[in-house]
Length: 161
Length: 390
Ligand SMILES: NC(=O)c1ccc[n+]([C@@H]2O[C@H](COP(=O)([O-])OP(=O)(O)OC[C@H]3O[C@@H](n4cnc5c(N)ncnc54)[C@H](O)[C@@H]3O)[C@@H](O)[C@H]2O)c1
Ligand SMILES: [Zn+2]
Ligand SMILES: [Zn+2]
Image 1 (cartoon, rainbow over the protein chains, first blue to last red):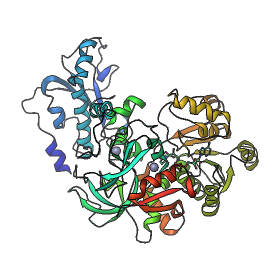
Image 2 (image 1 turned 180 degrees about the vertical axis):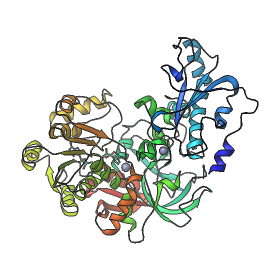
Image 3 (image 1 turned 90 degrees about the vertical axis):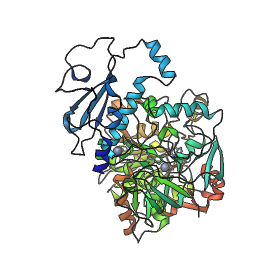
Image 4 (image 1 turned 60 degrees about the horizontal axis):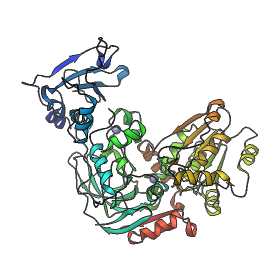
């Protein structure tokens, strides 16, 4: 299992990810400066630390590393032995709500990619694998199913994080 | 392979679907030997949980034989006889480590649906709609079991298939209601609903030392079953007054722990039944919480109410005043089966926990639509219909 996780993480090499290890702070992810309205939101997950190789200095798991320098990544130990908090946000991606909405509908909202990457990174670190849905499906596409199938596809990425 | 398919609201059929395939290295494929109906399926069948697609395979409570294991499965090998927890949990996230397995962070492949409806996503569940992961259900010849080391439990030799089957869902669910409801020695415990789940909760309360356990329903056969096999008292809400009976049987204090094992399709003899049915049909409330209201009302001051019955979303006329002013503890959960299953199998082996009486009807998978009709409409004394795919 360890080997699997190791294989799933890549060393950062040439990537220009900005990573900080910060103690604590009042604003989103742990910075002291007040949040300005236009700044993109941080997406955060907490990863359970069962695996000893996961520390704030570990290489990032592949799904996050894959986002390259489009994002800022911050990592810190969570309070109360709850593991590691991984925070990611678009670097210069501040968008008007209208553009963001349109991109989301088209499935091209970079925030969706961030959420999916965070979720998958957490799964890799905690369980060694990303859990896949059953395949092949047993369902048949029908008119009534369509909205639900769209919601489900979205369901693999979006949601609250 | 053959499977029981959801075709639409109140429409089931047996049909052919592709065999399941291994999707992860921690998966196992199980050949299903016995798979059983659950009250939760009725909510899906009736369309109260609107995340089913035509062709989804139903069923989440099952026992079978391992026929294939992924390279990362350590605990199980081909040929093992296993009972599988109905919830899909990874065993390694923070929630799993707190033994709150049904809240697993990694068990649901479509978490956003429930995150949007409830704020956060619980784990996955077999055959329980796309909101809980879209995993194919167990009313089929084969089923894929993710995180097999966590979710599948080897059945001890001395325990029959008939008995062990219920260690998948009904028994751990009931046990959780009594355990997390805080049942202690000397308590008076009232359980609403004498289906498989309520019966298992009542038996758990007895085994946890309750002095009196009273189970409430309107079906005489279910109540008699509970008296005969579980050693508990019955209360028929159609012929007896629930409030007065509970007061009389608890020294005027009211039950210490009230376990609700009915859920969102609750029935009542009073005018509230019509009220809730109309509101539910008009989609002004999604769930009928009649038994939950009663449990809260009749619970003693400072007592504990545990909701085992499944609710999808919104209820109406919820007695929050009673919860607050009586200082109640109100809890609920989908079952954290992994926490209890090994212990329950041991109790089954020792004969402390019998379950096979719940399986009132056993039939081939081909007859599953008729089985659901009997189970849903409580025909012929049906408490649980068990299907045998082989
Ligand atoms: N929490 C969990 O993990 C979990 C697991 C399994 C099932 N469940 C839920 O538990 C509930 C019960 O499941 P089941 O399989 O026993 O169902 P079931 O349909 O076999 O039994 C429900 C019983 O409740 C009785 N009932 C209806 N209205 C009542 C009322 N007002 N007062 C008292 N009794 C009333 C019915 O007559 C019936 O006997 C369902 O909502 C199901 O979804 C929850
Ligand atoms: Zn169930
Ligand atoms: Zn988990």
